[in-house]
Image (cartoon, rainbow, N blue to C red; front, side):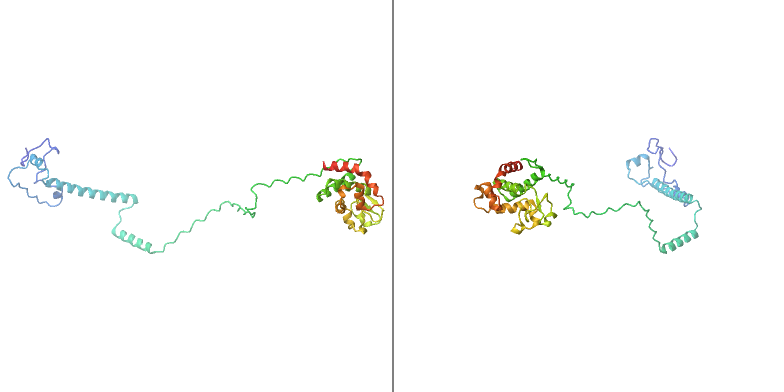
Length: 303
């Protein structure tokens, strides 16, 4: 037991009894030198550790003053450390009031100046990329795939000569049959036309020695029977047509068949009579001798 009227409590939370009210705090020791007046209890008995435990909400002025003083000291210490650290970072002594005023004036002057906008960095020229040329083709008309190559036109079938004819004669007979088919003439009319050409020109395209003009066109022989020309020995002076037209086998055939189909009952006539009705020849019976050969030739062409 201490002489200040309190019991030493060795089992308390703090390990020792509380500071008595007449003990000076840190603030009082650094501030005023006058001792604080001791606190008197109203009932005249000593405040013990048991009294504090009975009333935990009772004010404890000694510890409150100590806590306030300790907090103040800690704040002052942190402020001093931060100031020393800032000076250490700058590497210079603490600034005086004059230096602080000069820095403030310099900062105000610099804020009053017009700030220059930094120039934009010059872009590094990139590798030149060729600009794609826009296609001028119309997408609606341009096919997505390549057009297929056109098929080659079939070559005209070369018919092997029959009935003792050569190739020129067979080609002329084929031209007669093709022209008659284009006109829609039946097979009988084609046979009559081929037999008539066999008699008139032996199936060769004749030019005329009397008409030198006729020799300017493709021909295979030259005759001297007046102005007769072509496969059917038709005379321009008789109204069969112009020389340049009669020298074409297809045109000469159309002229002959046009006249033939206008004869009434020509399909039921004998071949020689039908041919003579068109040609008005001096030898009307001569056409009949070519009927069988003409039939063989037409059948070979049609088949």
